[in-house]
Image 1 (cartoon, rainbow, N blue to C red):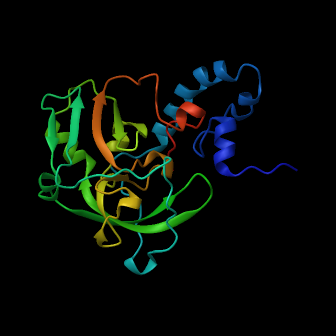
Image 2 (image 1 turned 120 degrees about the vertical axis):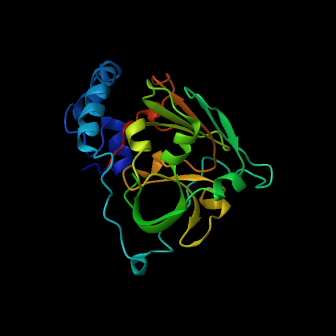
Length: 233
């Protein structure tokens, strides 16, 4: 029998663990049409499963698995000068801004020990430290009709999230890993980290956060190749 890992399955079916219908339709000649019809339904199902303000249970520090977090890159590791780095927050906001790392370090530090789950089938318990994404969004004063958030990375990777997941109290822009300064290979100076999304949603080397009221045609690097968009856990 042909065996699929989870990444292959999601690419074929267009669904995540929270999406339980229309999985086999992606194999038909009408896959594109089915994707257009089913994706909004899948998104609504997963939004119902998400509890936007409910923290996911965390692990004690003793459970950290320091050697299990695999380094995945989008072709190359970018060179970023921390001294000149700026995080841009723009789009449907009343206060667009650019923040230096010094600005970000002044914000309240949140630390959490969570399981990072990769769509390829492996997982690692990691301690992340950083600033809550919702605190950054609040600084930019989002407009009332904002529904989605886009992330652009220094390696040209791009990703998009629903606003509710971005406002979850455990969604971080992380600059620490296992109590130490985040290394460039793991996404320094800033990366997404959250226990509510699969690993491919957690962009590394984030340089721009753009708020919007609608999804762009390009939803995310892997999603544009057939992976499920919401990717909730």
